[in-house]
Amino acid sequence: MKEKLGKSSIVIIAISLMAVAFGLMTVKSASFALFGGEAGVQFAGKYVPFVLYFNFIAGFFYILSGLGIFFQKKLGSDDCKNSSTINSVSLFGFCCNSSRGG
Image: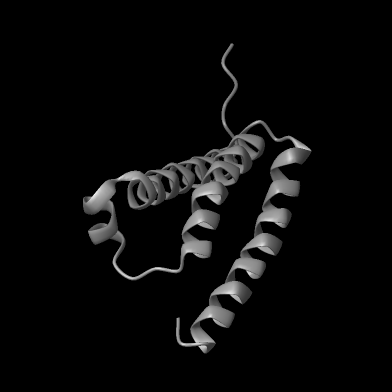
């Protein structure tokens, strides 16, 4: 017999799909800006290199977090906590760069 999905299962699936989709979009856009040549530079406009490289790497962690949440592994919640901490560091780097006129 097939199991019926409960409300919590549907929420977990939705959250994990959003995390994976966000990660894929992040990797795609950051990789195009980094490796897309002149078109990538025009696509990115003015950017802070540190933040762009960070976003490229973070996209893979968003995908891993989404998979961890989907399979309900501790890895998923740990990745989410670590991701928020690392995003704070990236925000600090961006603010430092912006305060110096960058």
